[in-house]
Length: 100
Image 1 (spheres, rainbow, N blue to C red):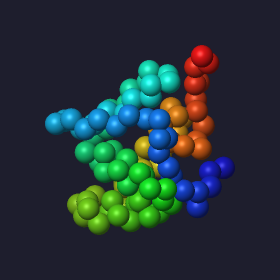
Image 2 (cartoon, rainbow, N blue to C red):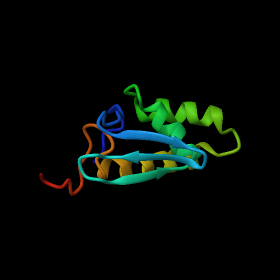
Image 3 (cartoon, rainbow, N blue to C red):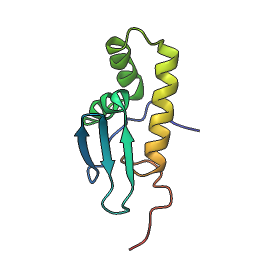
Image 4 (spheres, helix red, strand yellow):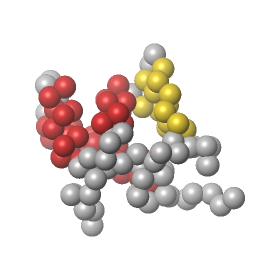
């Protein structure tokens, strides 16, 4: 069961690079790369300071008035799950992190 009150924090070891068509996250420890679209970049930037998911969702809803709150909640939940599994978020499961 996930803790909805837990703060979302980015893994400080991850390299963020913004490009014309989105951004990329790179984990130098594992070599993993993750592409972010515009919404993903906005969510990632919201996580620079540790924040609770509902705070992030509220801010995203204010920026994307044409998208329903329910859709943003689903997208954010999936985003946090994916990034946590890959080790891009601090304190989340570091799925299959390769040993050195």
